[in-house]
Image (tube, rainbow, N blue to C red; front, side, top):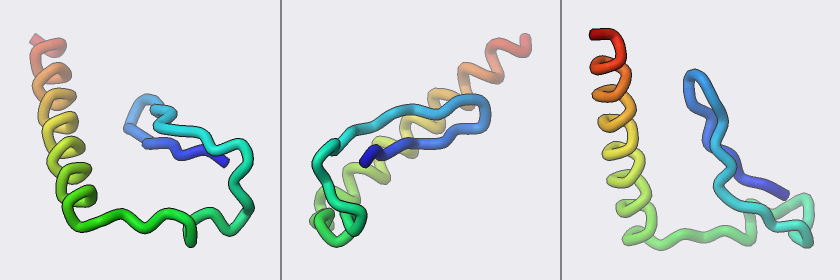
Length: 58
């Protein structure tokens, strides 16, 4: 089983769990702290990609 982050122009491999069963989402139970941190990291990464794209157009 793998987790991927799909972006507009590419896909980023986040993690792999080769021995995870097909019902793996029941295994993943993030805490509120983890979800908040992930949202903040994704927002930061999105802003960095947007800035990079804008600078590349100049």
